Image (tube, rainbow, N blue to C red; front, top):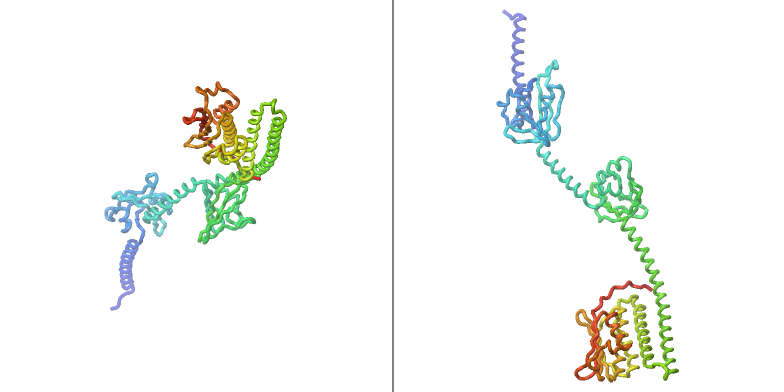
Length: 496
């Protein structure tokens, strides 16, 4: 007997039911395996937020086993806080159940595991809906981004260090991309030029020819490329407040097409250089006038001194019996001494362009021929150290030597010994003779004369020293003037 159609239908439905059950079981197993194999952590909850599934990555990160987490409120297993404030953060599961839409975590979220371990994570929660669109659960997918976060923090720390460093050095620095747009400037840029980074990117646009970008200008070459040393150049730029500043600038081009601009405000230096240049021109002009005036003065002084000496000679020859010849001769000798020293100083200035001091040896060589003419040939023996004296001291010394040698000869000396030596910080001038010596007891102030008054005045007032008078054991008098070694002040150079 054959089967009825109804019987066949029932058997087909039964076989179909068996196939569907098997397929569903296989499908579930396949989905379970797939979720376990996902590289991200997965937690699935029901419509109330209770956990129904966790894959192995979620187990590892939360520290909860799948069995212990099963049926628990997701809030107990998935505990998250803000990295900075450490305050609890609302779970994406709660947001999805409340709002019914996909929800993601805020940045810098930390997952606290069951054992207290912490992981930086990012995640998203998505609603699970049935065929009718009813919310039946939430799937939460998250991943451990701790390594990435550590790298971000390290990069941020390095950036802050560089920012702090660049903001505290007195150099203008700007970073430009490969299209010559400024991407970053330091504090010195804004302080000197006035524009902030936002203003540079908003209103104040630079062109490729702008010297701040290293572009070519009419009077300066382009900045050096990455293969050569950067070349510094100077140019003027009008800054935000309208001032015109002088900048020293270089642009270093990097291999990726970006570049770094480095500069300094050299306005003060340039102004100072210009001012120094003007002052040097004025000094040179004044020096030229001074040299000319000195030459004219030299000519007049020399002529006047010679005229006075000549008049004295005429008076001596014409009125030998009625004028004090000896005093006039001494005065004439002083004038001749002044003229000789004056000649020495002028010749020194003309040859070197400056006069720092007067050589004692050179001055004595000028005086000795005149002294020898008065006191007689070979009557003066002298020893002089090579000492350089200020002009004032040199002139005083010349007059003093002239007076002491004349006095020695005048009072009976046949030979005069002159010695000028320097020891440590002191100079000693000594003039001795072989005459009868000083009367005992000798008081220079009581035996006042023009010559002694002059010696005392020069030694004490002009040279700042002291004068002693003594008789030599083997006969003769000795006058010694001791004074501090003077400091020679540097004098400005005179240019012809």
